[in-house]
Length: 185
Image (cartoon, rainbow, N blue to C red; front, side, top):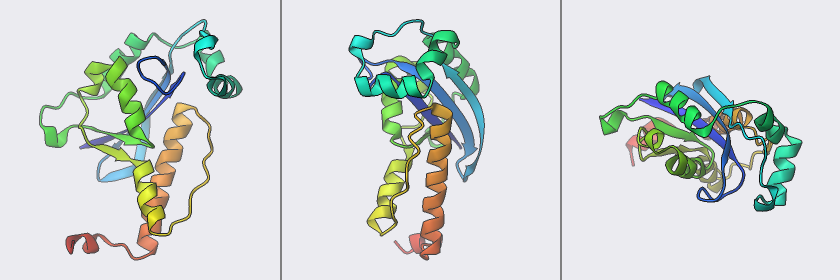
């Protein structure tokens, strides 16, 4: 079974009103989630953004990190990006082997994928590998919060999510949380 580490950058929080403007994907085996390879990154080409419909915080963020500029110069149409991703993420009929979306607050990205790329969405399991939930679990056991880089660029955010998930795993191992303990539950 495969994990697909995903991150989207968008023009807002509402998948019915906001737009996907960047996507990155990395692939890993479910049993080796931190050993990944980047397999896709692209921006959605858009010459002009209707800035009156975008929160000023988002405008500043994506102006400062260069994403709006990248979208105006390069990229692909939203439909073409889904077509690219459909060639990379297999359609698997056995529900137990379906690919799993992974990332921080991955339900957010999944809501946009469901809205804009329904065929792609149908290829994923209903289960998520959500790093934000893993971090909350570890924090509830005493792990300190990790600083966030807040790059808000898809590839960088994937790498941060994987680093945080790996740090949680190491923290749990350090404090003696072993897989044998799970057998006793």
